[in-house]
Image 1: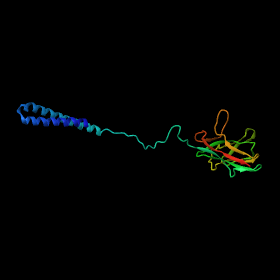
Image 2: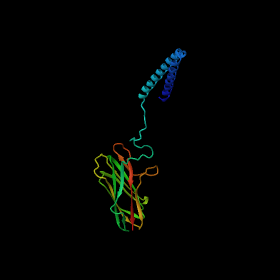
Image 3: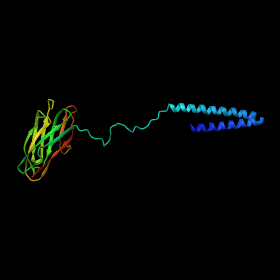
Image 4: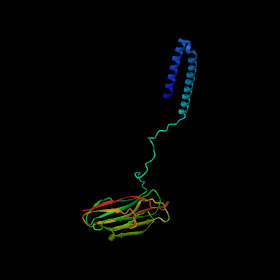
Length: 221
């Protein structure tokens, strides 16, 4: 708008000068009259153009970036949703040589499960497996293995009838202390071509939805 106001002001200034000259001498009456008409026409044109520009600007929608977006983060830093979780729990985190520690294997899942595998490793030189007992989460446990030569425990539970699961107790393992040292009891979580891992198979998708495991450290004194 400023670029239109300046010519209009200048044109009005010239019109004022012409009127002064016309009142002083008759020589400029004809020429000054024509110039005055032209200048007034120019002022009207500029003013009309400025009004059109204002109308156009009224219809222009200015879009500013939204700095308060609630869009969730994406990409590699986005947190992964946890579906099913295997947990090792014990009332005791230490024992003596010859003493026992009872460890509960729990499985928490928001979805109905078709079956699950718990593959757990430990140090057989420090801890020995005294007993493994199935829990009441699944109706059937076709595989309960203690393999000290492989330093692992394998427990498999299945839910062929797809019955409701009212418990999270997957299995119970009783360890005995063999050597005064600490041993980690850990889930084998990742699955590769060389080794199998713990799983939790969803009835709805038929896929492994195990996304988190919580291990346990036992001290033998």
